Image 1: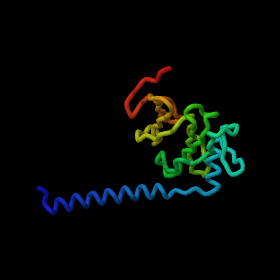
Image 2: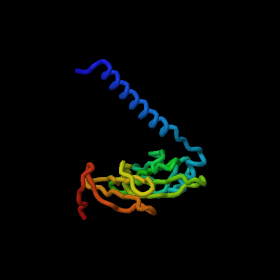
Image 3: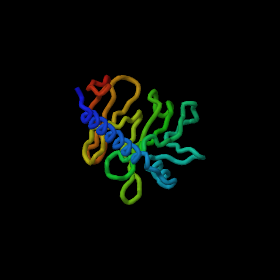
Image 4: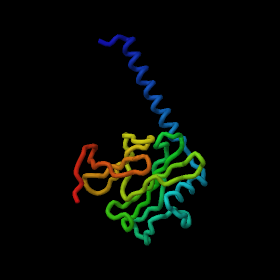
Length: 171
């Protein structure tokens, strides 16, 4: 049987965890990019501003096209600077997956650099490799997806998985 003191301790611990988690989410949500930083991030990913849209893939105007957008904006690698996952959609450019992504990172000198780009849907995984960069699962149609891992210089193929379990990609 729980004593009132134990119940209080459990509730207090749960509240502390809740507020600590909320603070982390709030801190992450606080990242805002200036218009100049947004433009620099898109340019680092190979995008050009066409009218009011950021475009990279050269879609000929299909109905499936969606212009570039910053889907993820947070400190992905733990260096205290913002990183962004920029996506663009088009079956003409990206096939059945219908989307591609670029991971860009702000440097200490204020410039942005391209870290990785690929056709597919990026899922940032909790596993971290060299210098804090997490593994990335690259999703799309099918049931076995590549996972790329940072080797200190670039993201390279590491393994395949489906729902977190190893699998073999069919050729």
